[in-house]
Image 1: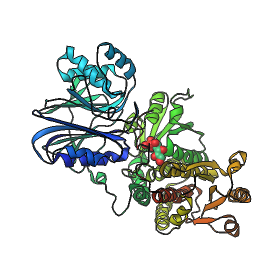
Image 2: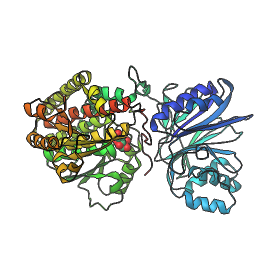
Image 3: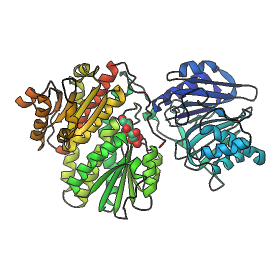
Image 4: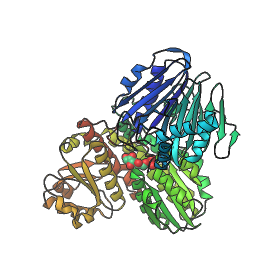
Length: 602
Ligand code: F6R
């Protein structure tokens, strides 16, 4: 979704803004723009289209000795088409109030109609522009821009993070609700961003603005709670930004780098869980019922969690899309536990579902971003330690999420005294061994060769059973989002109830067939596809005469006997397959069309 980057200081402004915007590119964008503010001059430019940041920053000075303020932005269109008028920054009628914004102002149409009646002229179709005009209107009575912004905040509904400046004034104001805004200070210059990554290059002094907080920076920085109308004290923390200094290293794209990072992500998540979460989790009460929620890949992790939790600790689980749950009337009480899963911790629907059930049941989150909105809204958090995920497609965060769901189940099993600490430790050691198996597979596989056969296909089916059915869903999602090939995941037996009509020699069918109690059933489903001339790619952890006879291609993954650990291995070839197909088709896998990394609108 939209990215905000701001700067107040001196130096190589072009380089700083270019680095800031480029680092935010991963969030997804379709236009970009900036406004440079100084007492003596201003500069402003916008560009439409992806990949236009290099061109945009050419209008910024290479080096500047006077202090300047720059607001810059990458826009992912929500209100109004992709156009120069709709790109940020936005202005009031006099072009004095300048704003860049991430989020949605839900009552913007109502406010716009009112402002139009007061003769305000709008240039864009965006919700953001309304805020600039609202501040302009408030300035008629408030006189001071800071108070005019606070009055405007009381009128708007929705989620936001924004930066504002006023032409010719040495001033920058920013506020947030539900969406992130981070400030960095290197002793001379200030940096403002939607996440810490673009700031990490310059300083480790970071401050995370909290919901309902606003800052005003002129000669010094002051913080307020705009809801309570009080000034507050906030300090910059020195934080370890090592993990935010991210490069692609030897890889062509973040997606493939992150696929390869999975053994490390699993190890770090396990270590953090044992050191920081396990004892605290043990003290949590045993729920009678669990609802798991999330979106996309996180929802798929939830389906695996359902399988694990029901089988391991025998607590009933329902898995709900967050976008549906937030508008349902779920029956919950103090014995119900909601587990919200999110990599980013900012997904609007997941946050909406949490807010809907807050106070009605206990809320846990499984999240990769410690200071995120979802973590703040939860009663308890199980952090994944996958490290920042830059590629739009979730990969390493998925395997870390399913690891946490497994560890959650084992911890409650231990709490129920069904296993002792020794058994618990043995399983953790087994998990460490899987990381070696994943590494081995990553470095020894035939997936790239098989990917060649899919690049001209227009459809694919992914089939699996039991715990590997959600893996089939995840494989299909990965393929469609990065390679633009239509793909669907189904429980393998369900195929007979409709999708079988699609099968012919042009339909690749990717089967997950591993040694478990459903293996023979999967082989029957493969037979059904083969009879109809389907093109079968089998992902399996064994080779048999049947498998050889039925498969056009076989991807052999390492075998692991523990059924709950199989998904950690079955998902890897599917992630690789999507990456290689997309890469061979010349698609930018890290920024596939229309997608955004953290979906902060409904
Ligand atoms: C798929 C993908 C998305 C996300 C979904 C939820 O590869 O990345 O489907 O999983 O948007 O995002 P988080 O986990 O950040 O809540």
